[in-house]
Length: 358
Image 1 (cartoon, one colour):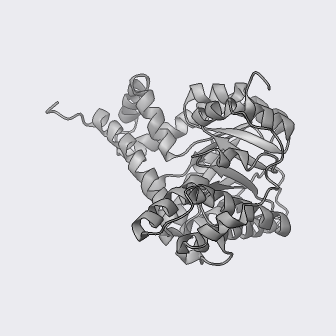
Image 2: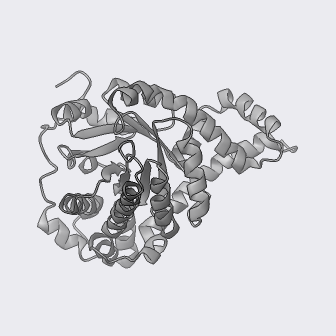
């Protein structure tokens, strides 16, 4: 085994399987780069975690932004801080991007989480992020409005990562939207060679929701069945994408167990793994081989198909575009992102208008 661990060993064995690091924290970026990571993702939760960990160092920066932008509220100051830090922290991946882009060396930032219902404002934010550096990847949620924003942003030349995707139906609609946008550019003589479209499948969300649903509904399942739900959705999506020839790359995210890494080794895809999970996987006593080709056990699928929400996430066309943001796992993602991000907003508020009682 390589001294750098099993995750590095898997990416070295299968060049088509890219490992990215999921974090907004510099020390995690350094760790990932030293262990074979070729890209970075972040999310509203990682922005909040970063601010909590680095609050002492960033407080003077936030105070300066408040002074320089007297009309901005705390949400706007936090967004400005996110953009400024992304412009700086994306530089760690810039040499790799310049050497091997457009698919490697990317740094991802999500549009403001509060705008998930407003396509116009999501596109506006996407263009802001896109302008920060050549290697930016802009995350837009796969909500009803988000799908329109994804298509328009890619048409305008933005490398988009569709996120909050937890169903086969969402992934197919994203693939179709990207194809329409790329085809429009080609028809108008615009280049597409530097556009890097990605769809992020959030595995652990489906698992956690189905476990909670089974408990709430009094349904008894095989104890490991729910741990395979996200894997089943992602493997089916992967097969469909290959069959349809979509130019969007699949990214695996939201890690909660061994299956979420192991089952995608060997796939022509991206796995964005938090540094903590990279370290846990690094010491696994696991044979490195192509697991991507292994189907999900039919007995596991039989158990999962007892759950109506799983069938809605797994079956093609079970969700319409207008259903996306009312699908329970999507709601779980949006609520978690907003709740965790709100903590960071409160921290900025405490600097902007300190509590006089404290």
